[in-house]
Every structure is written in structure tokens, then in C-alpha cells.
Length: 184
Image (cartoon, rainbow, N blue to C red; front, side):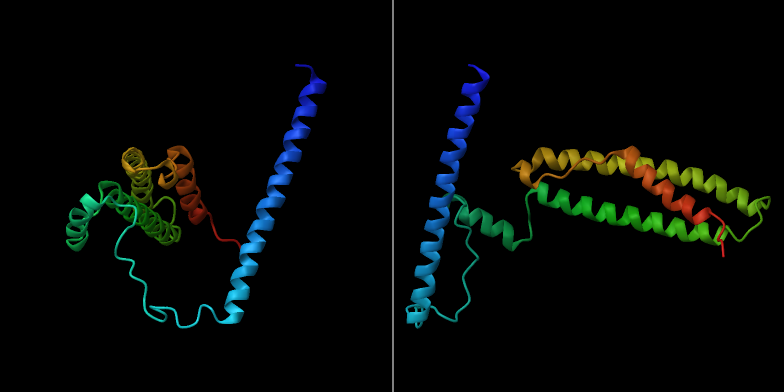
């Protein structure tokens, strides 16, 4: 195909797409106008079940033969593996960042000590251990995220993987900011 014919084909398809979009929006407007007109005429007043709560207990997408099994599981607080794993990941991440904040506050306290004191030297050793443990915790969480992504039914509910180096850079930046001397 020549470049000119490709351009012409693109223009034709774009024009068709515009026509379809105009048609779809006009159809949407038509339906919306009919609904508004019916509301104004009072056709939605006194419908059966008006003012009563919706029954959302049943999932219309679950197979009928599995409905009882799913109800038993739900009534006993069981959830699919990937749901439970997602809750674990959320709890682990929350705990991880709480530990980082705790160590940040500890670092702020240690900055009042002279740098040649034995307590400050112990702090330096604890900081190295803290960074090591952070990396291990992030690796565990990262593995859980991979497991979660393998178990969840669709990619749309999947979680993005942790880039451990980026997360560690965030942790180090938080701790190092806390260890900088305060300027007035």
C-alpha cells in the first residue's frame, strides 16, 4: 500500500468512527430524555417495591449450582485465597510503613546524642540492621503480591509489583532526612 492510500483509509475509518460516536451519543440523549420525561409525568411513582431496600445478597453472575456453596462460605467468613492474600498484603504494607515511621522517630531522638557516644554507635549498627530487615520484608511482600496476581481472576484487580530498590530508596530517604541536623 502506498502512503497516500493508507492516509485515505485512516481518514475514512476516522469519519466512520465519528459517525458512530454521533449516533451513540444521540441514542444516549434520546434514552435520557425519555427517562426524564417519564419522571416528570410521574410514571416512576408508586412502583412495586418503591422505598424498600434492594436485595443485593445474590450475585447474578454466580452459577446457580454453586449458589448454596458460596452462601455457606460467605456465612462462615470464608473468602477466596486471593482476597485473603490481598488483605494480608495491605496489613503487611501498613505494618511495614509504621515500622519505618517508628524508626524515623527513633532516629530523631538519636540525633541529640554526640556522634562519638556508644549509644550513637549502637544506633548506627541498628540502622544497618533495620535497612537489611526492610529489604527482607519488602521481598516477602513482593512475593505475596506475585502470588496474589497469580490467584486473582482477572488482571484488572491485580496489583503492581514492588520495585524493591525504589521502595528501599524511599525508606533510606525518610531515615536520612530524619538524621540531618535541624537548621534554624
